[in-house]
Amino acid sequence: MRAHLFVGQDKVPVAFVETIGAAVRITAVDLAAAQLGIGPGLTLADARARVPGLMAVEADGHADLDWLERLASGCARYTPIVSLAPPDSLILDIAGCVHEFEGERPLAADIEARMARRGIAARHAFGDTPEIAQALARYAGAPAPDERGAVRRLPVVALGLDDDASVALTRAGLKTVGDVMNRPLTTIAARFGEAAATAIRRLSGEVHAPLVARRSLAPILAERRFAEPIARSGDALAVIADLAHEVGETLEQRHEGGRRWEARLFRTDGEVQSLRIETGQPIRDVALLMRLFAERIDSLADPLDPGFGYDLVRLNVLLAERLDAAQLKLEGGAAQRAQVAALVDQLSTRLGRGRVRRIDPRDSHIPEQAELMLPATAPSAVDGWPDPEPGEPPLRPIYLFDPPQRIESMMAEVPDGPPRKFRWRRTVHDIARAEGPERIAGEWWKRHDRAIPTRDYFRVEDRRGRRFWIFRHGLYSETDAPNWYLHGLFA
Image 1 (tube, one colour):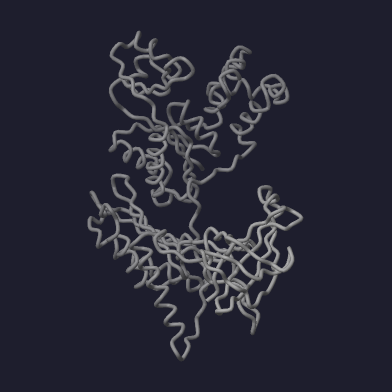
Image 2 (image 1 turned 135 degrees about the horizontal axis):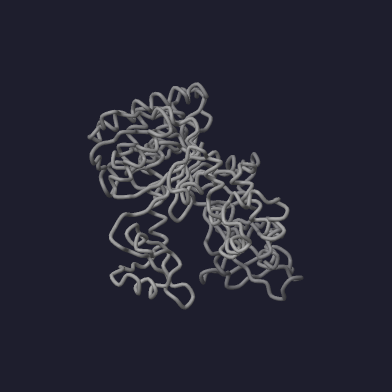
């Protein structure tokens, strides 16, 4: 069962306008303007000829979508599956969620009451599919006991086709959805397009289009509802702690820990306040979790405002990973790593996710692309850094120049051989030892890398014991005068 909401504002005659082509046309109107015969599609000049006192407001699609997002967040108290149908509709999948309200009608009445407290006129309808619910909410005008009969009585515009197709159906004498349903679908598809036949199948329930939820479902969640709202933030935190114990038991049974946690506080006026934290390691320690939530609250630019109170508190585990028991080392190594991880989590929560970062390996043979700077709490893309060969010196220096430093002059025994002397930063370095080359070409599977010259890398040591990582940019078969660069310094 799906419920559909059609949302609009109840104000003095107001029309929202947008410049379409060379004319300023109306895109939406309020209830008062609609009662005066003003509707979308009219030019502003024609509308003001009918209603001289009509107020025109420039349409703001981004603000409308933001408002719809806020309403969708409030509707998450009824079901976790809420889908947006811009510019003015929400689709709620309430299957399995009506028991909290003792039926569909009380749930819809609660939604309309909350909307009315905000001055919003909402129209709802129930349907077996999202398309049926949306069509009934937009064009039926009132809930219908006979769903199939109500669908057949809808005008052809309820099919959701473009204006040309709707006009063509009407001119052919098919004024209602039932008239179209009475015709063979092959004939409808041949004369009016496959889209018309598909729309009929969806309104008849033959084809079920997937409902894309606004938010992905959390793998684990717990919530508390209150008959009397709680009006203090401290009480809300205590409820979150109780939910964390409940969620922690579930995680322990699954041998998992949470990496991303989100607490959502639903106010009675429909506002939803979210608190999200992320940890570098999976956890289920309630004390640590509540310290991080406290840090998040302290770091908020605007403090939590309960308003008239919270009637629903929900705790989601957005990301869970395997967490098994760890054997502590006698010298305390595991304990030290846990303390470092807790410090990183605390700093990331207080300062912001992107303020505390780490270097993470990346699967690329291009030296400057072999690592990324990621938030310290972000999951690693690969297993870890490659282990060096036992007894061998490191292949890559710890310090890399970005970009590589141009070598002023270079001397080599043969064109493709190792360097013997180079000048860098006005200092001449006589090379005592050299190892290489390590040949690195561009990533051929990427089109923009195919023309990048080949690099020949050398690990060299001068007579004073200083070690460098240098490369020749381009082979002599690729260029007449390849350049040399110093890319890094060994410790």
